[in-house]
Length: 342
Image 1 (cartoon, rainbow, N blue to C red):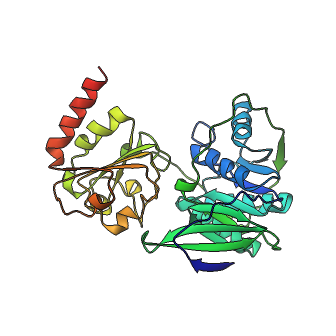
Image 2: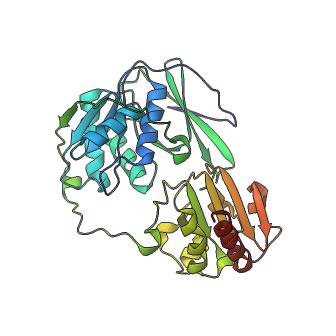
Image 3: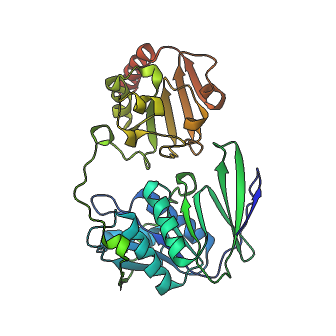
């Protein structure tokens, strides 16, 4: 793997002639997540060969049809005993699937778990690993992947040969994994069972319990198309944030300061040391726009900023900005939304 600094991406219509493996994350209801469908769409664009979906657990008809519609041509089902949330277990599944498929590259999501999966799998495979990749292109027989670094102020491009003896594992940023429109009436794919031998490290970890925190009870932050973020300027008024987020069907995120103050749980943090998000609409409430936060919203579509500091850095990247007290502006926005909706 080689690396060079770059600020532009070259579009290419080249494709690989080898399979690509995609780890398919699922919702609590068992459906493929939108991020997983996005990864399948990315893989289909990159190769003329099979796109192989690695699905933890049983695969029902709806899941099979959805993945086929997104571009998958082959499915592997791995019975992980409900332990797929353990990164070490999922990494073992990726390694087993690579041994079965011999793909040019394996793609996983880029949340905390996905990055750990990518690193663990790459170490076991003796291959390369790239995290938070935001752009993937095929040039000749090479896969070129780019990512933002230095808090989003610079870009690096890494080149992976598709002819290498080992399979690189790449975690893909949400901004690069937006799902293409799913083809209607997709055919159900046959499902192949995959045996996954667990390493001692993976077998030693057991999930005792899981729960969804109150503030995250709405749309999933990593996948939401609309996100409202609470910053220092909200003074911890979570009800105010919900008053805008709920009518929009938006997920709630937060800056590091808001989490440090205990206003909201750490899982809501967005930024360099939190989640990277790529919603179509981002609304920052009392967010100043420190670089460690804005590095996590590089993939956002429309950015709306409401802040009482006219010099706040967030206004430099905002598509729409309102200089004012969020406690006064937000109720007016909520009232106008209600009026427009009748």
